[in-house]
Length: 552
Image 1 (tube, rainbow, N blue to C red):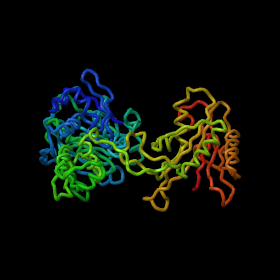
Image 2 (spheres, one colour):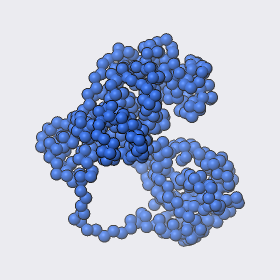
Image 3 (cartoon, rainbow, N blue to C red):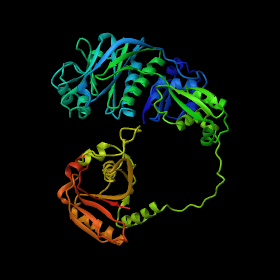
Image 4 (cartoon, helix red, strand yellow):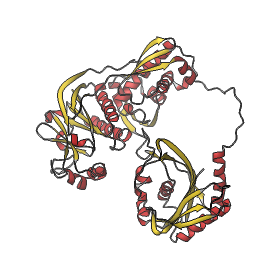
């Protein structure tokens, strides 16, 4: 999870002066984890549902509410800049959305520059899915001239000097030779044209989502900035802009909006109008267990930096600031009420209902599978249900397909729910390649599929997978393990040849149970993993593996 670093003096300068010891007590009550504190320097980890707190300005804003220093909706004065941005219709199927903001009268120094860059990268991680969904550029406004153009360029056109180099490069050369370009090349190199932002004089500001130009690089002398946010999701693009522009405003910057001219519509960004929500008093009491009245709830919401109006003794209308992209439902408002009440003040109690527990049938069969594999000499591992596309697909030589993605991932390593157990086993072997061989591991767990007939529905399946690595691991060894596994379950199996991208051609087989109405059908495959897969996980010895799925 993102960790931000700031000095105690940073908070004092922003209006929070409560003493370091008190701060150490308060920060965890706001949903953070203090990683380190030394010489008045804080390293604090926040959950990704609060990207507005990934800057010291955002932390100060929340602290002032929690401590009662400032209450209610923060007010940011915003004027029109009379600047325009024209969007090329050719970007519609590449990276179609963009939003802009101007922030004037900012103050920069070495420490602030580093904080801005860290904040930008944290937002890329939390909201942007490592720039795939959203990418942010921050530019020195004083060296460029509006209007600005967001256009689609051919890879060999529009050379410019990217950050950290001294010579001009074409977009194609940046993707091939520049370190940042190579890292993010897959985001755009599948298209015939690449996104580009230029000014009135055709000076290049940015090649989003890859890299900014050296021309608009921020320095200690920068006073006025232009923020661009591009992406594939308009809502996420606007949310990211609201978060970063209001963070600069907390430090004294003045926000100005720009007119975004699309081929079919015109928008003004940033849009800092608050969202309206309703919260029911009885529901607050029911979920928190607290005997709060409508006035208590209004006060606690004000401390959350929201405006609340009592409509009746049963209901309140709440204005949620534009930077709070985590408030989606009424229960999110109730969570904020509980945080402001302070979790330490909420007392636990035993429920009045007595129950007798028993093992859920879905999981009772797991113990049988575990006993069989342990009896065959395997050691159990457990991996997270959340994984990422790189490990789940690319490193196993598989093409990406329909999956359940995480809307607000904790990190770029946990962006989807697994459909297979194999990559988890390979990651385990990668992390333990220094251990003694042979290594024989297995995992029993649930996986989640999107229903092929209805994209909004999901299907949960139980799977078992195993992997073996040592210098002589081969097809015969894993076949004998699968046969023993089926035999111990009392099943007969059928084997047929099978081509699977993760396995060596000719050394992979599919397996299923012989039809029997008294048995749960099992489908799967086993064999010797492809050398490229082994290399992708930085292993040095052959790996054989199987994966089986239980159909009910």
